[in-house]
Amino acid sequence: MENPFNDEYFMKKALQEAEVAFDKGEIPVGAVIVVKDRIIARAHNLTEMLNDVTAHAEMQAITAAANFLGGKYLKDCTLYVTLEPCQMCAGALYWSQISKIVYGARDEQRGCINLNTKLHPKTTIEGGVLESEASQLMKQFFIEKRNLN
Amino acid sequence: MENPFNDEYFMKKALQEAEVAFDKGEIPVGAVIVVKDRIIARAHNLTEMLNDVTAHAEMQAITAAANFLGGKYLKDCTLYVTLEPCQMCAGALYWSQISKIVYGARDEQRGCINLNTKLHPKTTIEGGVLESEASQLMKQFFIEKRNLN
Picture (cartoon, rainbow over the protein chains, first blue to last red):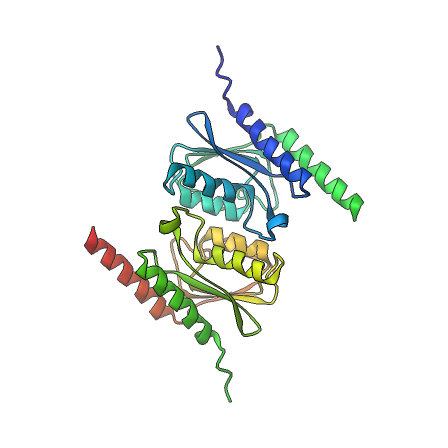
């Protein structure tokens, strides 16, 4: 039997978080952190509600996962995030020494790949998991925002 | 009469924060955020105490300053920090649109300058203010740490 706990499974959980952000009027980005097929942290973007540019989904997930683990290094953990991390979040992931980053949609302008943010040598990164769902949610958000203003 | 509220004045306040970190066994980095000669946020590194790689002095100062101002953008603000910001902190400062960053000591390996972290076009950065005091405190910390282990 195929393991149901694959990348799509966990990215769906991250997308659910992004939808919660969407419903709060936040740019819809969600994240979960997983260790041994278990979700140890869930978070979504809260920059508007908290009035805080540092409140990206990934940052909150890193803090929550470290709190769960009782240590600040996220070895053997995988982050699933609906949007490619920015410089700040990739910089935080560098310090966390996380094992793997899986993102949904690319962020050509502000994502860590085109901006060459340095990741930890122990970290691998891959993208494109449920990419169209993640980018569709972002597009929908900005269309609705434009129509409201 | 010369304005006593110059870069050295505020960097000394950041150094006092770094000394508080030192006394707690934290890597001694301190930061203050200033608007119109008034300190609106003070913070020091707490990564060990909080078990959280995101708890750099700058990150906490950004959150505290935004909280004080009631808005997430730090326009017209200057950050004084004893050590050149890392990718994560520079990435957060990018989002904050802060006006100016003044740092003490360079961080050749993990600082934002050599790692080419993108700053906001509205942000200027300069370094070397009380550089020797800041780097001396770092050196002292790592010497003591080595001797304890």
